[in-house]
Image (tube, rainbow, N blue to C red; front, side):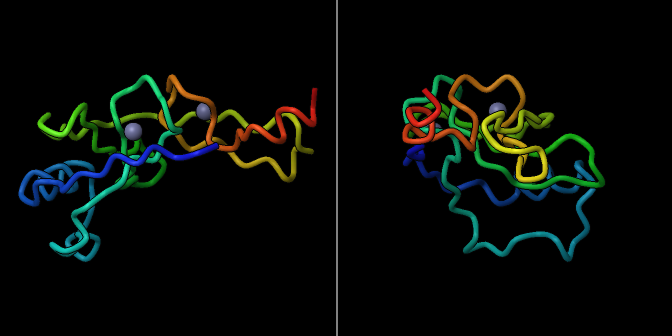
Length: 118
Ligand SMILES: [Zn+2]
Ligand SMILES: [Zn+2]
């Protein structure tokens, strides 16, 4: 699957507050020049653009979300999608890792394997 190309610079102060609220320690805070994040969803997805930021002890994940170039970045806590690829034996299945309920295909989906499976 091709990845969406949308990138945004995150507001640093807002990000630190979101990380702090999610339980991140200061040593886990990114530096200012790591603030540009790229959407991780599949190309043509229907959700807002989403970039994974942080998870604390198996709690909900912190994601940055935005719509268009001018839209304000929102920091949201989301549970991950835990679908594994049914075309692989269970030991080789890794969970999808997109937020649960995402509108695009799962992270492990790609067109070629889809065809090989019929
Ligand atoms: Zn996107
Ligand atoms: Zn999924």
